[in-house]
Amino acid sequence: MSSASTRKVIPMREVCILIALLLAVALCVPTAAQQAAEDMTKSVIVTLHYKDGTVTPVGSRVVYGPPPDNLANSDMLVNLVGKNDAVIGSYGIEDPRVMYFDNGAVLESDVQFTVILPFDATAGRVDLFDGATKEKLASADVTGAVSQFCASHTEDPDCGGSAIPVIVYGAAALVILIAGAVVYFVLKRRTGSGSQESR
Image 1 (tube, helix red, strand yellow):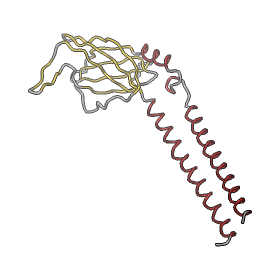
Image 2 (cartoon, rainbow, N blue to C red; image 1 turned 90 degrees about the vertical axis):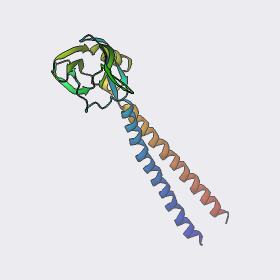
Image 3 (cartoon, helix red, strand yellow; image 1 turned 30 degrees about the vertical axis):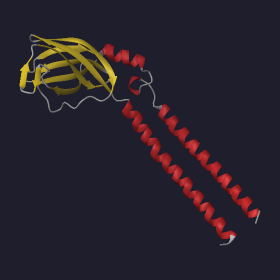
């Protein structure tokens, strides 16, 4: 093979490497952004105490993580209500008084339980209703939990933070890969030139 044909093969290989690097960036950056978005999924957890027909709020907090899917249950209904009294979402839960055992189930008269709902920064309270009669059983204020969470997580997009760090990460990854590709190409050309001069 002549030196002329060798010079034609090397640039094509370098172009393929560059394309591969750019494709890697195109695949990795959206994945990182999606992962970051998933990591920001939050839930509002409200703890309530049911005793002798009366439900009393115990406390509430916000945590990272998705809420469970309770769409199939309707023993009790839970509404997440905004500060403007508009219902943000309505969800069903099992009757927390029912305790299951290997040989059956019993209905407890004194039980503490939690309700886990999707996070919303505009949430004001959580209302609990009897699924059959639609009677309101309790109302728990969650504004304090939301405010406390956002005060501790100012970088969270739902609390007024920005997604710029993800963009910066992607831009930095792109710059690093392109810089690496350029350095590789320069070194490859110099190596190729040196080998040709020595012939």
